[in-house]
Structure formats: structure tokens, C-alpha cells
Image (cartoon, rainbow, N blue to C red; front, side, top):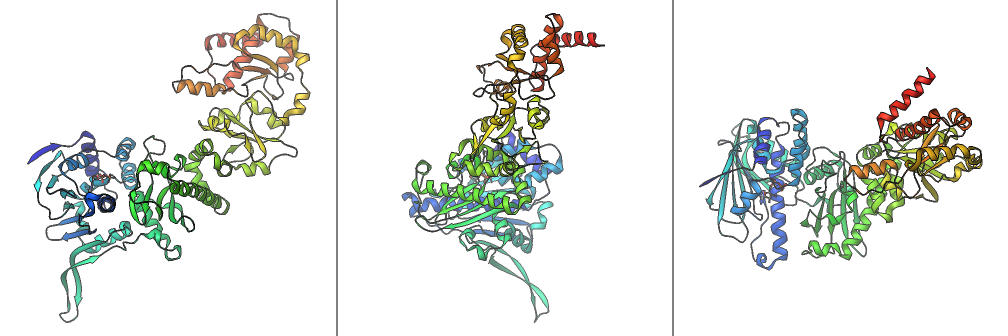
Length: 621
Ligand code: ADP
């Protein structure tokens, strides 16, 4: 027998599980049953597609056997099984990216962390919440030898040769104090029904059943084996037969989420292609939503046979938070990942599924606005990613995304913004590039405030990238207020153009500021501030340039800002008539620096800025 050590991460996780995370110990059973179900799925798939496996016997089932006296439970399956190597790498290391993410999210606050384990599930290791020791005996399909893996969940594990009549895996649990509550047939049935009722394979429970015996006037225990779960592919049953509870339970068993889903869409398509889809929207964004290695939430079935659950092709990336099932009648069972990528059937299913999900979301938005806001609180951002990538559905996505705005509290839709447009207003305006508070106080908004035109506050860091590519909502132009070209809606202001009158001052400013600015112009967009900076239509804004640099892009072109000054402002009027001197030079620089500051752009030379400011203060005090 060889003693081996756990990978460091496993030890860490086990310490946590054993010492602090006891809030939902019953999930151990959900995790083990779902492992068995996955193992059965895998073997069934092989027996249907691979010649070498076709002749193997396959009687899929999961057996739970309770020994109340010994305080043990076994969970046995006739699935794919594991050989020595598999046991070491699957149960001795953390292979799953999800579990790594889990570890990374731990806060050290026990209560929060134990909720996290509930939402997350940490797979096999959760068994150590209820076990003092565990034996896993397994034989891999197609192999003769069996192996036994034993561990008390503290330092390491042992592996030795063993016997097993058929391929599959048996997990033997010796219950600890915490686990004793599960050494009870009734309790086990309850937990299986709760989490695993719709696992597609039969789950049997063997236990001592107490029944009242009328003749002897006492309850008598008999050893029985009963099927505990419904074992139906729930998604293939008509909606009318299914209750909300059925849907929620299936969701929890496929997603590993602890909370109920926010809503779900169940569709059966008939016609040239036949398939069933059941999509769920989680109530909380998955923890790995913004990680490159996110876990795919969609399981692909062909004629009720599980095919794979890690295919990123099934839905576009921006819908990676959706959980659920696609079950097709038309795909071949042996469909491989390479084939999936250009498979016509799958492409049609995918296109229709995206349309379905988006149109259902639209229904929710229209009919259950409060629920929709909960959805938006979690998933507004992925929808925006969709605006960037999913051209075909852009119009729908524009209706689904929500925005902050200068006109309303909370969030608003473009449709509502449109309905609030002023008579004759041609475009919808937005401001990007910075935190909400910065954007709301930007001098660029002054003219819109004055004219009572609504402006959307796009303060998400992806907004500028996304919306620079979206120039229309229906027939209406979408325009950024920090771009130099002003919209038609400011035309009357533009007519008041005072460039001629300001010309001498503009020239002076240009001469003073030199190559720090691209141009100096008379502004038509300012009301209260003396100056502001704007970017050219095709150029990234100043904040965007900063962001690109912060992200490590070194050769971001550094286009210079254009300074605009407010002809109606006292300072500007005074400067216009003032002769050149040190004061007007300081003023020129301060006009530029304050405009940069208001846009959240850090000053190149704060010391000089402060000196200038002090000189000015000195004059006025
Ligand atoms: P997950 O199931 O989420 O991948 P687990 O920690 O539960 O994570 O299991 C780790 C791996 O061990 C599984 O991916 C699977 O390869 C293997 N495994 C676990 N239980 C079984 C089983 N009953 N039969 C075959 N393989 C199993």
C-alpha cells in the first residue's frame, strides 16, 4: 500500500471543509450522485459510439446502501470508473478550474464562506463534511484491475489493488459526528429527492425500513431496496406536467447552485429540426463570469443521451451565464467538438436559442419589470459585450441593456429615453470615460442641461469600447458628448459661433499652450465652466487612452486634446481684452489643466499647476 500526499490546494480545501464549512453538509450527497451520473453518462456515450466499448455490459444505476449499525453509506455506480492513475489525478489534486476559483474567493469570514460552498459545491471533497474516512473502490470500463483509494481527508491518501465485479465506482463513507444525521433512510430519501430527483438514471436505496405491523402491534424493520428518484429527463416532459419546484430542482442539480434560478425558458422545437431547450438564468452571476476559463453552463444531449458539458460553441460567449440543456434529435451521437464548430444543425439550434433567450428576456422586461431589474443588476454587462460581438441581435440587445441617465433615478432603457426626447431632437447622447460622479459633473454636460436634453451616463469601463461601435438605435443616432463634432441638436448654438470675435484670444492661447493642444476653439457646449477638452470623432477619448496604457498597451497614440473655451464666461471675456502678461499666461495654462482635471486626466506637472494657482490666489486675496 502506498501513502501519498494531497496537492497543497486539496489540503487547504479539506481543512476548510472539515473545520469551518458546515452550513449545508447535505450537499455531499448531491455532489456524489452527480459524479455517479456523470460517470454513467460518459460510459453510455462510449458504448454508443466507440466500437471497443459497444460489447461491454451497461446497466446504468446508482445504488445507495445504508448500514445504520456500522454508520456507513455506500454510493455505487456502474459508470466509467477510474484506474489507479485517474484516482490519483482526480481525487488527489484539484483539476477543476471552478474549485480553484472557489478557493480564490474565500474571504476568511466563516459565514460568508460557508454560503459560498453551498452555492458552489466543491465536488467530491465535500464528502469530508460528513465522513471520518472514505474508501473509493473503482474499476475502469474495459480494464480488469480494480483499485481502492482510502483517505481520512487530512494529510493524504492510500491506494491499493482491490476487487470489483463490474466496472464502476463505489464510495464508502464512514460517517463522523456531523454525518450521523444521514445514517437514516428517511433523511437520505429526502435529500436525494431534493437534489437528484431528475438525474436521468435510477437511484436505489437499500435500508432498514420500519413499518407498523398491526398483528404484532409494533414496528418491524425489514431490509428493502427502493427506487428513490423519478429518473426522467424532465426537460422532455410537457410543460403542463411540470411544477416550478420540478424546474428549480433540476436547475440546482445541473448547476450546482444553491439558490433558485431567477427564471427559465423551456422550449420544444418541432419542424425541420427537432430539439428541446431548457435555459435558466441564475439569480446571482456565476463567480467565474469574468474569467477567461469560465465553466460552460449548457449540457448537450442527443436523444436524451448526454454528450458534453464543456462546449463553448453552444451559446455565444456573452450568454455564458445561462445554464441549462440542449437536447437534439438530429445530431449524431458521436458528434465531436471539431464537428460542432461547423455543424449546420447546431448552428441553427444556436441561432434560434439566442433569439429565444433574448426575446424571452424582453418579455420579462415588459411584464415583470422588478424581476428584470434583478437580472440587470447581475447581467447588464455581459449583454453589453453582446452589443459588441453579436451584430445580428444588436437591436434586441439595445432594448435589453439598461443605462444610468441625467434625467432619471436608477436605470432606464433606450426606448424610454427615446420617448422622453425633446421635440425636434435628432440624436441620443451619452458620456463615457470615468466614474459616475466624474461624468455627472463634467462641463461637457452643461449645454445639454441648459437645453434639457437627456444624456446617458456610461460609467462601465467597457462602455466606451462597446458604444464607439454602436452608432444608431433604430433610426436615431447615438452620439458621445465628448467627441469634437457637435450634434445637430446643438446647431442653434453653433450658429452663435463666436470664433471670429474670439480670434485674437484663440491665437494667443494656441501660442502659449503650443504642442500640448491640438487646437483651441470657441465652445458651443459650455454654460458655467470656462473651458473643457474634447476628442476627435475617430480618436479614443483621453480616459480611454489612459485605460489602454494602464492595460499595458504601450504604443497608444497620444492624440492631443482640443481645448474649447466658453465665450460667455467672465474669465474668457476678461482675458480677451487683457494685454499679454504673466497673468494671462498662467490663466491659459489653468484653463487647460482644470479642463483635464474635470475629465479625470491626471496632470503632467502638478507642481507647476499649484504654483500658478497660488499666484492667482495671491492676486485676488
Ligand atoms: P467534478 O465532478 O466537478 O469534476 P469532483 O471533485 O467531484 O469534481 O470529481 C473529480 C473527478 O473525479 C471527476 O471529474 C471525475 O473525473 C472523477 N470522479 C469522481 N467521482 C467519480 C465516479 N463516481 N466515477 C468516475 N469518476 C469519478
